[in-house]
Length: 134
Image (cartoon, rainbow, N blue to C red; front, top):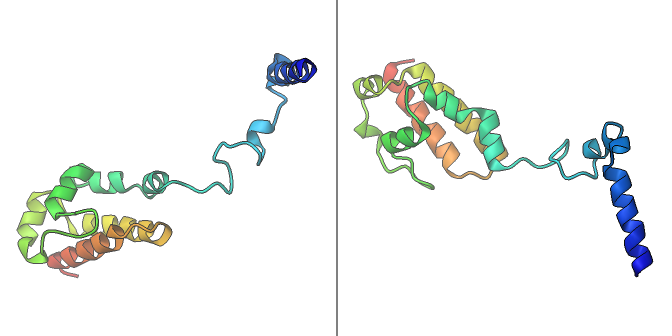
């Protein structure tokens, strides 16, 4: 048992030493758990890639403020379309283009995640964009 411990300790020291540092490719190999190619992305990473916060931020709102404004629940929308007008959307910083941009982001999110609220939000925003005309 002592011999095995010594061998493992020697191996650990030799792999972590300066001689291996810049020449070791283990960190880039498929064996390393570093989220490299082929690793599944988390929903948070996908949301970041889609850029929803930036898309929503173009209106001057945070994602939380937009959620409250549009009535976004975790699985449903709590505000009917009839509670919005072109004027109320414009006053809140929303234009047709901004609404469609965020809707596109939610469509992308819905394609790659099981997020049930994303297609509902996209549909709501697309319908609201129609208040500005086509």
